[in-house]
Amino acid sequence: MAEIECCDTIEVHEELLKIVDETMPEETELYDLAELFKVFGDSTRIRILFVLFEAEVCVCDLAQALNMTQSAISHQLKILKQNKLVKSRREGKSIFYSLADDHVRTIISMGREHIEED
Amino acid sequence: MAEIECCDTIEVHEELLKIVDETMPEETELYDLAELFKVFGDSTRIRILFVLFEAEVCVCDLAQALNMTQSAISHQLKILKQNKLVKSRREGKSIFYSLADDHVRTIISMGREHIEED
DNA sequence: TAAACATATGAATAATTGTTCATATGTAAG
DNA sequence: CTTACATATGAACAATTATTCATATGTTTA
Image (cartoon, rainbow over all chains, first blue to last red; front, side, top):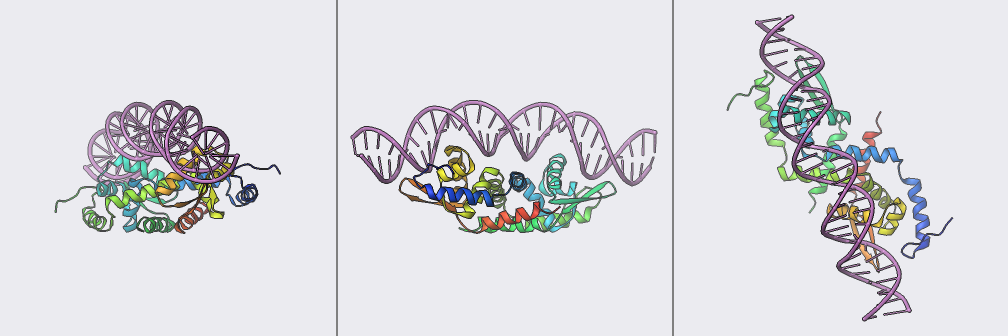
């Protein structure tokens, strides 16, 4: 194994690189993880999720509740759905959206806990 | 209270708007939440966090382990630190970074659980 | 089948952001 | 105090993305 020069602490590095190599998830998982969190990284989508915490609603409900255009809401719902954070159901002309599962609540909760410290 | 016209289901809307108004966090909290998740929404920063799950390391360790430039790593560490996900400690010429608290592990875990379903 | 309604979607624009490059800051050794 | 090392930072560029506008799709009612 080639020696590594960095910070003059050669031994630590080899062990570190070995551990990182063993525990680091695969490239695709890292990418998917980042993609998932990106979805939470927009306040419009977070607002949509907070509405869905309370009720199953249609697109125009959301547009009204959040005071945004139908188009903007629809675009964001598409992203939420692609990432399986919400699901939809048609009822006549309307399409109702709701949370896909409870991970969403948990992830948002953890986030709130974090930012409320200090 | 003015009547709302949307999807021809007037009663539901008034109640929804009331509930949303009561439960929706304040603008600043929504913004902070989105900002926090944005930090997790980049695979370089996630990689850094995975290294820090295993050990306290200096910047050049990270650059080496992730095969990226020192500058790129440093820029990302700054963002992680501003959002209190990591902390740092100087030791001689080096600066060692470690996880700030355990919310980071929990949030990443929840994300992994979510993407590993189906 | 035509009209009205609810939602989805593609293109365009503006804003945000990750990386690189050059350089600055801070620390230790000679 | 000068040099070398470790890290931080500002500017620039490329890439990503949220919203708007116009329009398309799908459903119901007349």
